[in-house]
Image 1: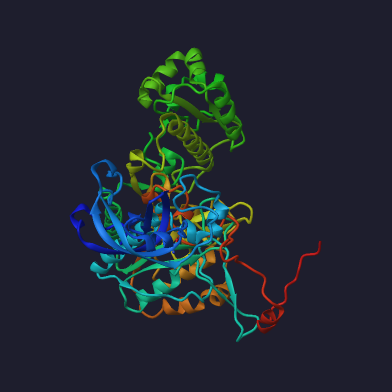
Image 2: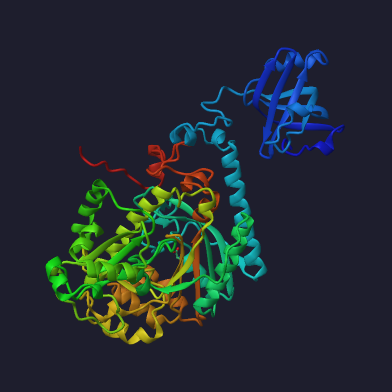
Length: 608
Ligand code: ASP
C-alpha cells in the first residue's frame, strides 16, 4: 500500500499501485506522489538511470492510475518529510505501467480549498478520494464494526427485516413502492423495523439488533437524510436500565474505536426535570441549567415589572459572555415576545439599577461570576391563571410556554458563548467534551392543537407506566380534551442525548393486546381502522408475547460527531441533498409510459 513504507524497508523491492496525486518535473528527475487509501509515497523517476520509463512518465497526469516497481531508498536527510508517515523513504522506479488514464477532474483530491458541494456530490467518486472522506468512511466502518462486535459478544443476533413492507408509523411520510403483480397496491419502505423487531421477540429471538437503513419522507431540514442508518435493537424481559446498559456498552466501544474514552453510566433525568431545568427534552449539559428566581423579586417589583407572580421567572446564566451589545439585545427580543406571553429582560444592568436588591439575590442564586451574562424570562400578566392539572403532570401549559421560550433563548445565548470563546466547534479539543444523558419518563401523548387530537409522543407501541393505566382507561372516554387524564399518562420511553443532540430513542413496549388496542383508541383510531392497519400485529400479540423493549440510535449522527464533521453528508458515502436528490446518479427521475402502464399508474399533473 502507498502508505506502508518506512525507513526499515530501505533496500527492499516494492510494487505500488495507485493514483498520481501530484507530479513535480525537475528536468532529469520526476517526482510522483502516489496515493491510495492508506497514504502517499514519493516515487522518483530518474532520466539518467532509466530513460525508457522517464519517457513514459512524461505522459503522466493527475489521477492517472499507475503501477510502479522500484527500490525503496532512504531519502537524503535534507529531503526527509516529517509530516508524512512515509516521509523518510522514496521509491526509485525501475518499471512503470500506466494502468489507466484520467480526464482532468473538476477538482483534485489533493486540493486544499473545497469546491462547492454540488460539484462534490455530482463527482462523488472524486470527492471520496480526498483524505478527509477516506478517513470518515473508514471511521464509519470501524464504529459499525465495534458496535457489531460488542452486540454479538452480548449474544444479540443480527437479523434482517424486509424493506418492502407495510407502513410503520414513526411520524414521517412513507416512501412507497408500487406492486406490478397486484396493480394499485403499494409496499411502504420501513420508517423503522419497529413491528418486525417486536415480532422477533414474539418469535423467540430474545436479543436482536440490526444496523439498518430506514426511510422517512420528511421535509428535509439541513441535517436529515431521506434514507439513514439506525443501530436498531430489541430485547425480551428488560427493565429500561438493562437497555441503557447495553447502549452505554456499545457506545463505549464505538467511541473507543475513534480513540475517545467515555464515562458510563450516563446521568439520567426525567422529562419534566429536563423541561424545568433546560426548557428542552434534549438538554446540552455543557452550559448551566436555569435558575427560577421568582422569589428574588418583592411583590412591588413584580407589579412594576408587570410579570405574572404565579409563574416562574427563569434566569439564564451564560458564563463569560459579557454584556450583549444593543444590536444583540435587539436581535433576541422580538423572537420571544411573540411566544406564549413570555416576557424577556435582556438587559440585566437595567434590572440591577432599578432593583438592586433583587439583582443581588439573583446574582447569588445563579452563582453569577464576573463577565457572566444573565437574561431573565417571565410570564406576562396576561398569560392568565394556572390551569388545573391532572395529578402527576408537573409542568402546566403556561409554565411550559415559559420554559420552552427560555430553552430556545438559552441555546441562542449558548451560540454567543461559543462564538466568543471559539468553542462548541465540532472539531478540535472542545469537540471532545462529550456530555451524555438519558432523558426518561416522557409523556405518552402529545396534544395536536391543529387537528384537536392526541398523537403518540414516541410511537404507538410504547408502554405507558403501569401506575398510569387507570388514566389511560378514563382518558379514552374524553378524546377531544387537551387536559384529559391522557395528558398525564407517562411513557416508559427514553432518549439518549449528547451535547444537545438526540442520538436515539426507545421504550419498553406494550406486550398486552388489550393495552395496545386502548392506545390505538386513544389515538383516535376506531376498532376497524386499528384492525385494518395493524391487525396482523394485534393478532400476534395474542400468542404469548413476552414483555420487551429496545431502542434505535442514528449511526450517521454518531459518526458525524466522532469525525468532527459539520453535516451528515460528510459521513455518508452517497448522500442526498436537502431536496432529497442524488446528484451523482440523478435520482429521482421520471419513468417511461410503458413502465408506468405495467404498474397501473397514471401521473396526474397539477393544472398550471
Ligand atoms: N423505532 C424507534 C425509532 O426508530 C426506536 C425504538 O423505539 O426502538 O425511533
